[in-house]
Length: 277
Image 1 (tube, rainbow, N blue to C red):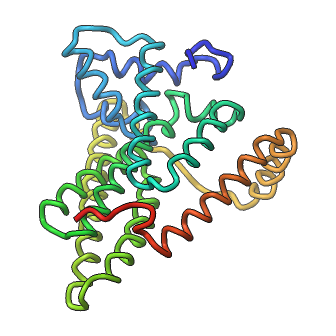
Image 2 (cartoon, rainbow, N blue to C red; image 1 turned 90 degrees about the vertical axis):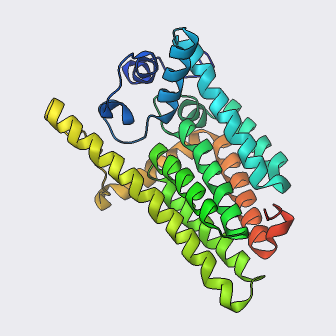
């Protein structure tokens, strides 16, 4: 998975931005997100910058690619802590997709995409929420809020996953709690999610204000759904699946595994992950 490998797309200007951010010497609010876009946060790039300044070295594109793969490896480790009962199945699907499906290969191993960077903060936040739901306390609320902030900073999409995960964890915790304590877990989880999201929103607002003052552009990432394009998009997806049978098989296997894991997880959560008490 070198930057010039046939397994990946060509190294382009989008891919160069994270490397430039990692080697940059200054620091401003504009460094909080991917330069020129607020679609994902710059935590990995700032961590790489701190490492480069501390160690006195320069990030090459090849070294930064290895650094990104280390983030994916960390995400895999955190995932195994979340769901040890299906770690072998998940690891096998991940390895198969990474090796045989160009679509996954391109997006999961491209440093200009948010996909490889968002997984480790997401799974870390899930572990923090699980610990909070197992035993609610002020310190765990604050820790969970911090990890939620980091996850939402990595990608705003992570908030949806965290809300769904918190719902399942709170529901599982309430089965074993006396009635008068059941509301505590709801309040604790909601407080952590709200505090972390509010902190990320404040950071994003500062980024926009700074970019507007400096560049006369807020650099907001616009997103919308064009309903008229949905049929065309679905047709393209079906054409893609028909042209790559291995993608269809992996999709089917992945969906089946996720449905089974979700069903088993909700039915008996302790079979997949021990509670943290």
